[in-house]
Length: 610
Image 1 (spheres, rainbow, N blue to C red):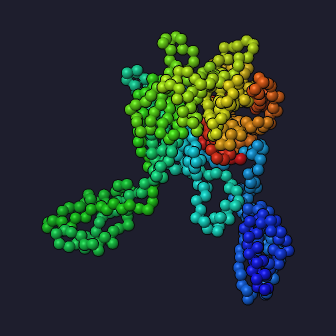
Image 2 (image 1 turned 90 degrees about the vertical axis):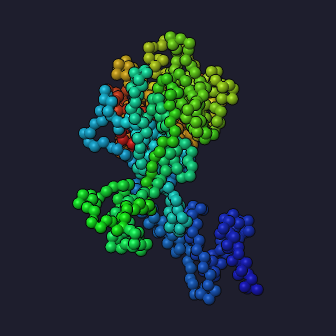
Image 3 (image 1 turned 180 degrees about the vertical axis):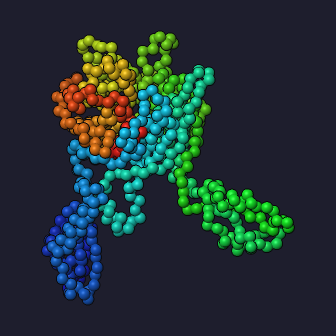
């Protein structure tokens, strides 16, 4: 009878440990848990978090009476081990305390420096103004959908790929599972490969020089372990495949000359005598060169034929191959490319037209938007950016130089001259200046991940739109309002025509965009959020951060409310004259799944995390 009771207690203990709520449902007291654990020699270690439960069970009927267990003692052992783990994490993080992600994602983030690639040394300058040979300046940045790869393009036509190194590809060992319970320090990337995507060309019919600068990069769907991406310059789009290939090495000779058989054939046993001096990709050693120069045929001829041996090693190297070239479809400079959610098509946009391509067909495209008037004198606006909807393959949006955004539906007609919705800010009362239309031009648009909200950037502001409400923007964020008195100077040095990009976080709660003096700004776009951060693209991003008070919101209409935040006083940087208009942060990208930002400052790639 006593044995049956012990078995019942044992079963209840196991059930309650596996299902925490079962203890309440079954009405089992904590005392029974402890007594049963003592009798069955069960060691239970519980963390403060319910999910961090480490349970080790061992049953020995003969030794159970000899064992004395104190739960507070085991708990202290667990706490000491957790303290050692936290200390180890602090040492790996350079002394910074590792803090888990907050349960409330709307709380303000504290940004920290993560990595930098291509950082300039002290006193080194990248000459940009008037010099077309500044080929190292980054001109495009893009994360892939998984966030494990990052691509950058530069003015020299090169594409550089980075891959993430801290992804958890664990095999299920105990140590790897325990390490997974602690938050990662921050995402880390490493250089993967680079390739020359575009070369300078010359259009002889138009006497036009075509730069090799990469304007945009877009990742495509992966297949069979290979990476696919689109890159474009002003005229030509290319489809690239990047895949790891086994390295082939060439060994010296295929046999030992002392071991030969009749008719010049080589004995099979001689393959084991292959020398170890292997050369990668057809290289020739200096020793072999000297032998070849002094080599002469013997009088009796060659008894055996000795050939170099190609050996496939276990090492692999990424190789980029151009699969298709999409050319001769744009008369004007390409400013945007965007993948469709169907994985089969993409669009490319220039100043006056938007073309629809199939990834498998490179010699044919369909013109879906054409804003070119019959007479060029009647031209009033141009296309500045275009983006496919992230989930609906039939919807896309494009912006114009007048500050408007049009949403079109491909199901309506083959040529989408008419739009489904028009998003533009109502005209404000008051006089207009010469710069009103220039600073209203939209330089970039981005859809949020779920597709309901649309982010746009003009010269002065960052706007958030709801595609279900076309009365006006949901929120407006002032990026550098302190530059309004200096528009004349900005026009004289052409800085007023700078095209700043924008990005939005994967959860849609924050947005970021760049400014001058290598500054970029992060805004909380969630309803009721007042988060605003100014960071500098350097190893100390918060060095020039100045807290800026928010403006009170003002009602635009009974439906839409505009929140104008981030306005700055003229002394935001101590002295606006100290702002460097040549060091501008135009390109940045937000990690699709984490709070991590990659931004380009000239030829340097900076990465930050929160």
